Length: 181
Image (cartoon, rainbow, N blue to C red; front, side, top):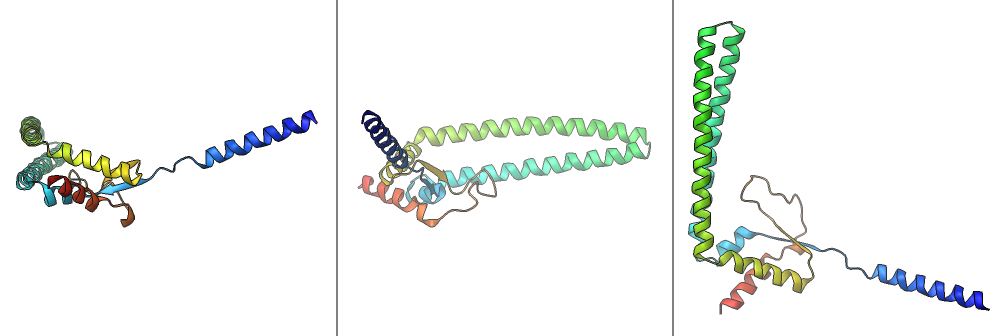
């Protein structure tokens, strides 16, 4: 009798534990198009657009400089192969100068972009407003993670596929417009 009660109690505990495990929340993920929110709401959208355009222009210059250095290295390899010491030394010097100029350019342009980004963030608490609204919508809707659908820093998005059902962009915009009134 005592063993059957223990067995029944053990089975009941295991059953309750299994129910508890089954009741754990499944992680829900949402995506948001941050660019669309900025365009839809920000009074500084033009400033942010200009910043992104400047960033893209600088990246084109960096890519161009890098391509030139690679071409010089290829020419130097050809000069080395042809055993043309004079041309090789001249190209080596040119490569060193351009590489130094490249490093200085990248460093200075990154500092410029950092200063501009700081001004944008300091002049407007817009991004804080965006993030607090994303958090609010995500918590209300039961999402554990929200990803930016489109990355401004790369051609390809970090999100390769998503269901439109998890896109909360319009809900964030609506929440922001509702608070602005």
